[in-house]
Image 1 (cartoon, rainbow, N blue to C red):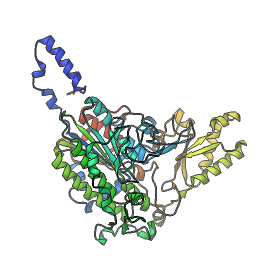
Image 2: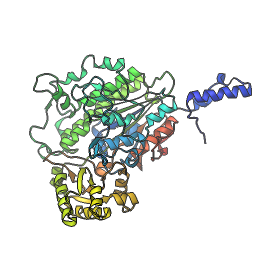
Image 3: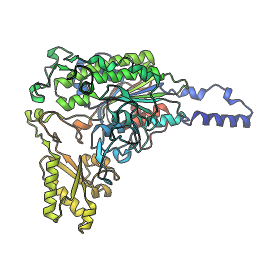
Image 4: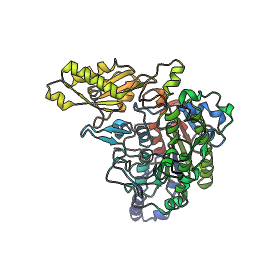
Length: 558
């Protein structure tokens, strides 16, 4: 078995100098035979399509062009049974998994936002008041830094292994998409809803490099003003999609016009762009600018670079209309064409033979409750406020104490442990009583307590396993609630949301493409998104991230 040295280049040089003195041989002048055997890619590109369920990738396969999703499916290793293998399937948690190879109980990102059980205050996953966006308005809870991420990423380890010579750049329509892919040592760029610019924060740098400033010179975000999003394909192509009337109101259907009340590009217009194909188009344009501006894949030190791209808009579209809608269908077709153009550019600029491409998603999506009920599924929305009121009323009747359940931090509930102690109650008694009540509440399938998680006494079920992985003893709540399939916490009468441990939320695409490195084909083996990090670490010949628990997908490797 061949092993490869992953120490920093300067450390290897020191060793060679010492050996030269001992042996009287100039080892530094000898051919770098060992280095030539390590066929590292010049560039790793990690694409995360926010809110893309596996079923959508295959459902529309016959309508893809040759160069986008079809290229990935035919030239890459595609896992049909790949999962985000944790129970709280939301954007921040899923993005954190991709390049850490870790579950939330280790990486510490338990939701998009949560209630800090020490202060009782809300904590956004990537907020840090010590840092601000560069040249953009910054609110106290804006996502500006990876402070809450407790483990390293592939990019962090790549930078460490190369003495910070490798470049790690990430870009996304959402702050959490870019920041949690980039880790501690990368540079993250985020779409700004108020200006339409892409900006970083002073956690990463004090000012933007020249290529970023050049990208914004002509205000590329304004070119879509007044444009419409219309169906890309002939009407017959959407014949199997659900009737618009089931998933949307009359005002929320094709065509969608991107404008604003002011009559010119402004914050209203830039915010609207997120629901549609145009922010993804700009994200990939910015990624091209990063490749050119940072010379990614042509690193002068001869080391690999990493580019992370999170495409945010499919999540917005699926939230608004559901994955069964024409709008979601059309958006994915447009994304297919955008990816085809990007891959063609990548091939010309870096060479696909020099590149490893990974495509996955942070979570899947359920159908809208309206559609689910139309096909006779049991599906509803649950009001967390009403549930909390009912729970506290029940606990008051049982223990004579008001408001023992203090906060909802979906899908978790915080209990008032100091009050429980003050009233001489037993923690386990209150937890178990709350759990028994919640199991009778409409739409609730499972309930787990802090004591169960701490003692490892959850049932031997997959649901329990995924929820245990999602629970972090320092920051998570005290009661964890799991809805019934197709139910979710929310309000209104349109749209849908994710976040459950069920397969429609966990089963996501996992495709790895790399000429001469990856064996193309369909793989039926079970795989997890946390397997991406150790697999890329192996290909890059670096140590895996600190919390990595995935496996190397060795069956795909040449």
